[in-house]
Image (cartoon, rainbow, N blue to C red; front, side, top):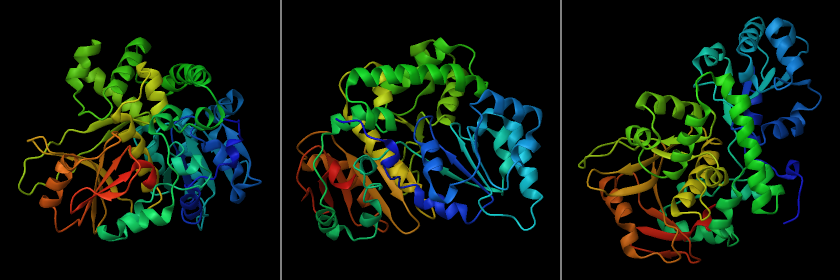
Amino acid sequence: MESKSTSLLPRAAVSVLDRALGVMPVVVLLGARQTGKTTLVRAHPGLAGRPYLTLDDLAVRLQAEADPEALVTRAPTLVLDEVQRAGDVLIAIKRAVDGDRPRRPGRFVLTGSANLLMLKRIGESLAGRAVYVTLWPLTQGELRGQGRTGYWSALLGARATRWPQVLAEAQSTPADWREAVRRGGMPVPAHELATPEQRALWFAGYLQTYLERDLPDLRAVENLGDFRRLAQAACLRIGSLLNQTEIGRDVGLSQPQVHRFLNVLEASFLALRLPAYSVNRTKRLIKAPKIYWGDTAFALYLSGETEPRGAHLENLVLLDLLAWRELQMPRPEILYWRTAGGMEVDFVVETPNRLLPIEVKATTRAVPTDARGLEAFLDEYADKCDGGLLLYGGDEVFPLTRRVLAAPWWSVL
């Protein structure tokens, strides 16, 4: 694979960023470190000519600590990178915004590799003044240069009987899910690095930077060795119900420590907790979240696994759903469904008017018994959905049952 410039890859999030710039005085672009936030804001035509400052720069950070008001008022508009590194800057931005009459939409564009909404000590400063956009890792459509997420909107906008036509019109290209998992979606390893060895070296540096630079800013980790073991254990449990007591027992940590470390991983957009769909009608439902990771290639690196599992394909689909969700207004919920009796659906997309249940199988053949969870869900919520989707590792789109369509994972992503 030839090296290419990641700036040439259009990002689906540009559309929501453009909308946000016309509405609120502060636009905050969030996401894990190295997902392309800086590239996006520096290459965006609507932000051309704005002063750009990053708090990764020690001189800028020292100025932010000494005189944050002077920093944020040095220009009429400003792009400020890695804002979680200096909380006082957000207080100064709040004052600057409150002093504007009338408010100026898009005055400040901030980026952060920690979720300010989870870090109350600084996130509350921007309440009512900011719109938040999350930049997830590159989707398969973005990696192909198409600047898009999966065809979820088209599927939700059509009756289930028309789904084969929707997918046929998309004319997607077959792909190897294992290779997609190994590449992940971080722009440099996914798009620029050609070999597994190069990617492993890159992730080693990424992890070192995260442990040494980002974690001290989050002020929640006492022992880096404990934290790394917890992260590894989480990667080995991708797609599983989250049991903090069990994880703690396996890695020798207390449940409160596990809870705190998982919060840090989630605030860094590395770990993801997927909530349960808990509208209970006739069946008793499991309500514990499931755990996934923010990048499949990084998850493989951390866990030490050499072969992707079916759970990694689930993770790949989830990340595409989350990137798609970011573009919608109102934003749908992405959930999973599981009964106490063991019936399960990997993902449930909940919109105000419709539910879309999705099952993911890595096998190259799909058989009717694979649809048991989907059929149970369709029975339970027949008034909200008319069909289920089973994504699998094969090549054909076909009706698996009367109400469930089997489709190759790549035909949607």
